[in-house]
Length: 125
Image (cartoon, rainbow, N blue to C red; front, top):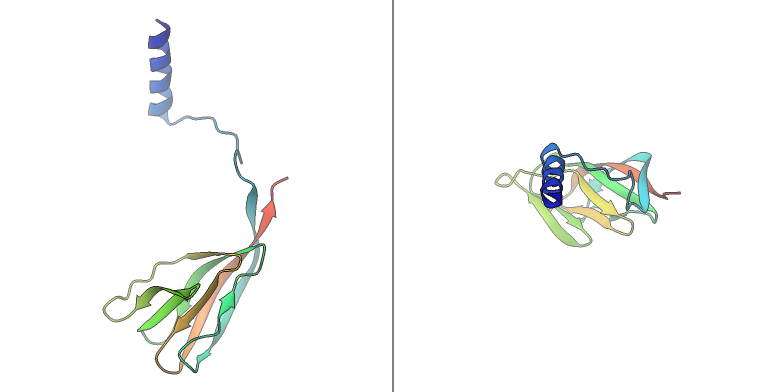
């Protein structure tokens, strides 16, 4: 009979989706809004400047824009995507941790714009 009660209880919990987990059960840090960053300029020699996430920060890259297609986005010197007429899809946001860097490549001089939300990594007390 006890087994039947246990099975019934497990069924109720799973079917209702009610699970009691303490808030912040395993979290060691949380993100706190810091500022909005915008970087703009002109690529003169293939690459934009490299932008690096400061220590104790996290960046959420919301948008990268150029007036033309056919640019590449590099994170930590790895080409993460190539935007072109054939492949115009860009997956945003891009989350970057402290120490990560981002830049874009284009084959000729072109204007660019980055829109980034910066968060501070704060220890939970």
